[in-house]
Image (cartoon, rainbow, N blue to C red; front, side, top):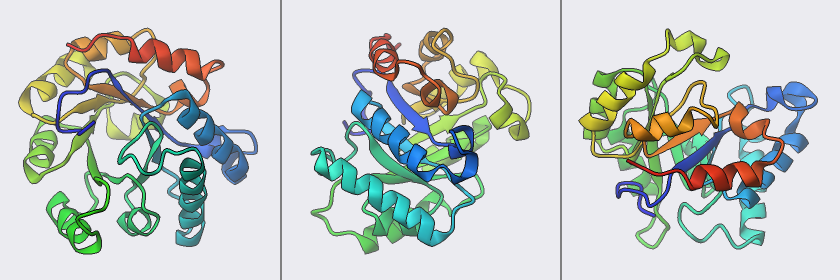
Length: 232
């Protein structure tokens, strides 16, 4: 699936947070197991967002995940189910041959990232996704115009992990952003199985979440149910 085309089903993105797993911030084995579970369950993208890891630790984590994906026959399909996106660290994403990089609003500009990717990769390499987190209509328009492949917008609903980004944006603002750009928009922030339908009805092409996927007691069933939801 090319992210710039309308997807045939909702895109599901699991954003990692190993601090919420057993053993907390030291839970690299638990994180590896959880990501493997998400990949096996059919989650579309896995955003590795472990900001406190050193460059060496993060590179090792991505390498281990890519090795597992290759062993499962996933690594050569571009952005397959379980495609690894590295939060912010373009260098780690490129050296680790991840499916893409996810940028914050204060990360490198999309145009500069695109140039670096073009220089570092050959034409025969699989597609490399560049996504951007946005918290305003203005930022969403700017990122889409700059060439982002997809956006993550929020927080749509109240959630502790996104409290630093201000009050919830709500479904009306999500719908406004989805109408304003031509690239897929994933909703984030307080997403639950019950309100995911409302996000898709507002025009979102999918959802991104931490706890929804990380704490799911039956992740394969959840993924099947979310993938079956209709897009607008």
